[in-house]
Amino acid sequence: MSNIYIPLVDENDNIIGKQEKIKAHQKGQLHRAFSILIFDDDGKLLLQQRAENKYHCGGLWSNSCCSHPNYGEDMQTAIYRRLQEEMGFDCKMVKKFDFIYRKEFEN
Image (cartoon, rainbow, N blue to C red; front, side, top):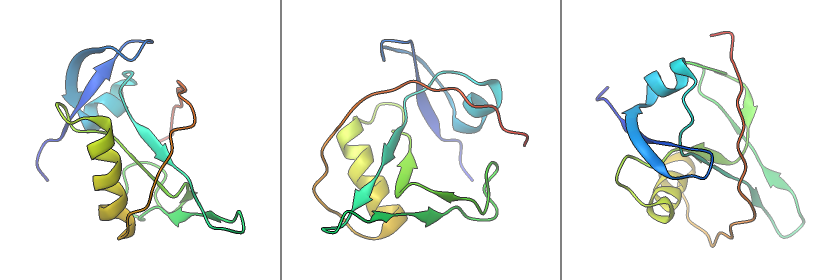
């Protein structure tokens, strides 16, 4: 797998550098990411099960799609790219809110 670089950010989402994705996660560095929640007309949420071989949370059920923009890639492009790659479809999306979180994983 080639090295994928993602943008490191400050608490105001200003890009302050870049890091390999795996290293950003291992070091707990604040980085830009997104989470997509897809609802159908009845309000049912589409979930996905993470691949067993993911380096964290493998096999767990998760949101519809989540990922990171590549360093230098704008967020809109990344969101639609990853939804197509992960789920195989595209749809209209609406940004609802921003948040910052930190979570440590055992692995």
